[in-house]
Length: 566
Image (cartoon, rainbow, N blue to C red; front, side, top):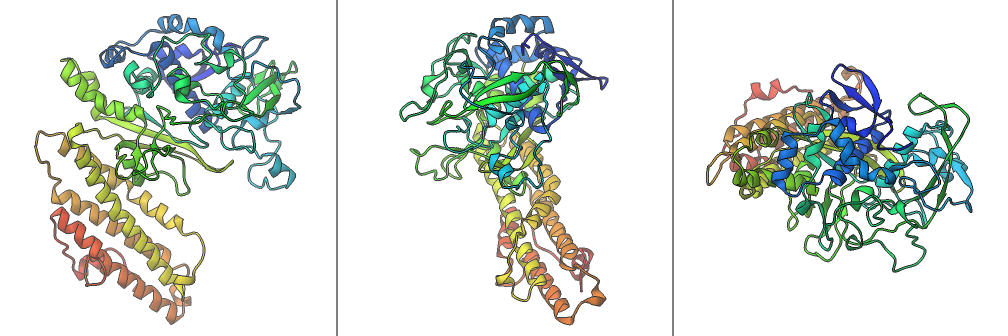
């Protein structure tokens, strides 16, 4: 099977039908999306198509990028552009195989194909019978199409795997951030192309651009002998490879074994004439080191003052993804918080100003710039064990570069207030639940998660208003007091609602007076804090109100309307 010429990807069309077609179908205006059987496959397949476009159609500059956005290729034209790379995308055969070791690996034992899936239990999990939630044996037969995606998904996300088992180029469990139009009815081309960058933006320092070729082993490692990392001094550094290699990284050594016995794919349910049931895997694949920054992944510096330390890729964390992570995903702040958004994001936000200065027909991009979303997804990994998969869409608010610091400051002040209120809410719930809250153990992160989820829509509404304010021609833009006030009220309302829902875990008539006293006291403290009243509590709220230019006016009726346990 060839991954450029065979119909192996399931595409969803305007009328809802799903059809397996070759990758060039992404240029069909009737195609809306991909339709993979797993969330991680869906994210990987999007990255596969973006990588293909970046490899075959890298625009020479931003102006050329806009030309392609406005006039996309047809399916036949895209086939012609992909044709020179066909030899690098053979999945089977005696020659080079897509993302597989050139060596047939005859010296290692066969292993189950399930080992390609990041969420499959490892050897220790099976040996120690700790595969409680994700059981062994659930995936034994895989069709070639799903095997290709499992292989690609593993190579670009490879987690830690033990001694000699190499981690991915961007670290285990990296987050990916993609730019999407807000209009979900746009064809797939219009949703993929915003993530393709011109020559001057796609590479890293030290890399030299050259036209991609199928036989370039600095681009496609599988086209030549394996870069074995069995000793020090042979790490793979950015300046040693093609600028596009980050899209095709290959840390693991695999050989898929195709079976001639018919079988049903345990992932997609389709019949396969030559399924994959076993594979060969070997240690000491490419060992990536140095200042790698994948174009689609955000990074951060743990200590912004130590620029000699390598930045780390952002990863999924317990509690999910939400607006508290938005500034780090969108707004560069290397010297402050250490945030380094994905280069595809930072370049996208700069395109608008570049096009405004260079062209008069930037309306098409102007619409995308003002109405775009950020799709963030990835595994939450505990070393080599996946704890979950996260996928969330956020508004991508872009403002002129001169106002980036202002937007960062506004967004940070809103998020900081939410974080402080969430912390206070959690502490008062502990006071309501326990006699000695300082000794209470256990994970209460679900309280934070519920609070941030409940206030997410309000934050994104405020974020849009921030963008509109900064998009105006004011030299010193000011965010209105009403926007500040509405955000404060949304936080106050949800904090009280959550407290009242969580504080009482049983019927009131069954509670002892001491329990009721604790609940009432904790709620009284929370309300005083939220109202900004008192000398010892509420200083954070008072400071936010003062900076926002609105007054903290409360009344008994207003507080009662928020709900009460008393």
